[in-house]
Image (cartoon, rainbow, N blue to C red; front, top):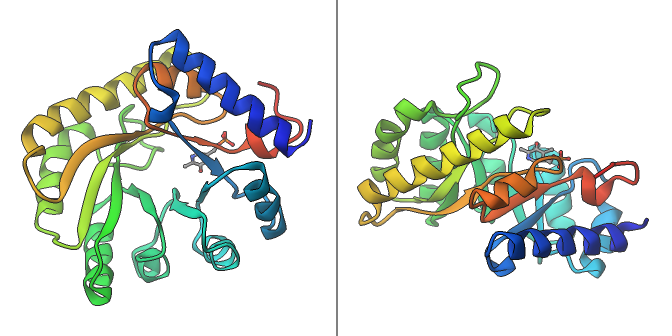
Length: 230
Ligand SMILES: *Cc1c(COP(=O)(O)O)cnc(C)c1O
């Protein structure tokens, strides 16, 4: 299978999952995670119909974004605070706001540019030490801090599930949706916070993520690798 076939089959699979669980496929945005491919592949991906790309390191993010500025470039990886200026104002959405120091760095850069940067707060739902993100019981206090940052707009939450066990992944995604519902009640009226986006699900677990309400799935290998077994 080539890139076009893998993209078409991914879209078709997602349309089928949506119809199985009574959702509109338009509600689920596919972020093509292009971190493993070289810039020329992006031209091919654009020709296939992809529009949203995810990168997890600032250098390739900028390299590909400046070559293909018309696509939507999502930043999905760990971001060092001193690299915030490489990403703020350039990312369509930063999915990985995971700590107070990064919040302040993003606010500072966005204020300098006089723009509003859209972000998602990454939550460590599973509570695994190894997973980046705000702990569920610290999310409320963290969002209070986001409220004070006038140049940051929080659109929702992001998480990564432990790999290998779909029932654990499902619990993780259900947990993120529940947190968004609770926080949506607290912050729904505030100007710079809404809880409309849930970025969750990757190549191996996007089905359960969509069933649990994902509005963005971040898919890499299933689209870009010719040896991924779905
Ligand atoms: C690499 C990556 C993905 C995509 O993973 P696949 O298993 O290749 O689909 C999604 N989200 C993040 C944060 C990643 O780093």
